[in-house]
Image 1 (cartoon, rainbow, N blue to C red):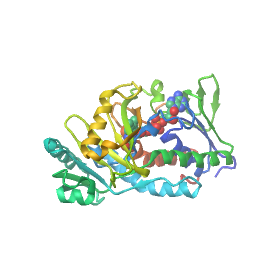
Image 2: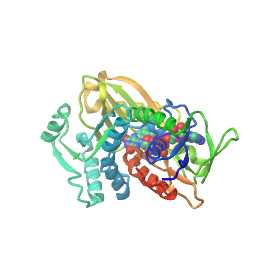
Image 3: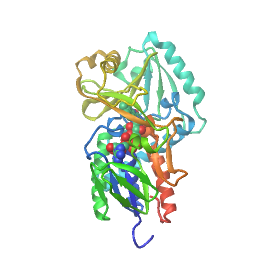
Image 4: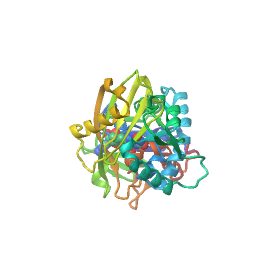
Length: 367
Ligand SMILES: Cc1cc2nc3c(=O)[nH]c(=O)nc-3n(C[C@H](O)[C@H](O)[C@H](O)COP(=O)(O)OP(=O)(O)OC[C@H]3O[C@@H](n4cnc5c(N)ncnc54)[C@H](O)[C@@H]3O)c2cc1C
């Protein structure tokens, strides 16, 4: 380990930036974070997401590489959440009780098509059972709320979900303490306009020099990462303490794919639309109706749910829908293109990037 701590600058304190900063602090680096927004801002993708960890369900729109990163991350999340808690962060709600997939009788064809797609893409990895067909009785046994409502469905037993608001809060607590201990900093409301291999330039003309700089700005890196674009998603948060679901439920429909993810305290996140649009404005009436109708059609008891939040944000996507985590041809380090899989794949990607950074700086431990 070098006598003087290597100093890493990170542009973007979202999901990737916070996780990377934490892992690099644990590896013995000094870290300085910059974000265009304040810590509590909820406009970017990270705080808007449903944070489902669905490697198998996502095979409908992703490849085996994303699946493998997702399975690896599902193992890392509980370890990382335990480490965060041990460092003083709050406990983060994390469950791994699978995902249920159902469709109304009229949409049975879409469910069959979805099941065939997943089966064709399922990797043969020895990860145990990844997909089971369910009949009405098994659906009711897994989720009593849905007993008698759906004749068939699918169970994806390896999947999970976490509460991203709690994760952000835990990371914030641990980062504040960790940054202070090594003379690092978290600069809020400080937009970075240019990322170089060893420097970050801010919107006020300031140039901040480091041993290594990393771009984690999500869609905020558009101007410097060719092809990067936003994919709009809208979600609704409701409170329905009288209704109980143990695990996320995906409702297959010919025109949209909507899910309901339970959260602590009787909350449910209903999401998410997917529109190729750079518009990050408030949710539209059409999307709100789709999300609300899907929830109500799952069970009429949701009719009394209180709508707590309607939010829209942009998922950072590259044209091939693949993430990047490492240096590009010009030597600029980036973690980006996490698209709709940020929570699913971030631990494995961040671990890979932190390991490569440690190697580049000849650190002993990539944590
Ligand atoms: C509606 C919706 C639902 C989703 N559901 C899921 C899900 O269920 N499961 C899942 O795995 N993923 C989901 N995602 C995807 C996930 O949220 C993203 O993949 C992830 O947040 C991307 O992380 P990131 O750190 O790259 O970007 P972000 O989380 O967007 O963070 C980028 C950070 O950079 C900052 N920034 C931007 N510009 C600048 C600048 N110029 N200078 C400094 N800082 C800047 C922003 O303020 C922000 O803090 C969902 C996304 C959306 C929108």
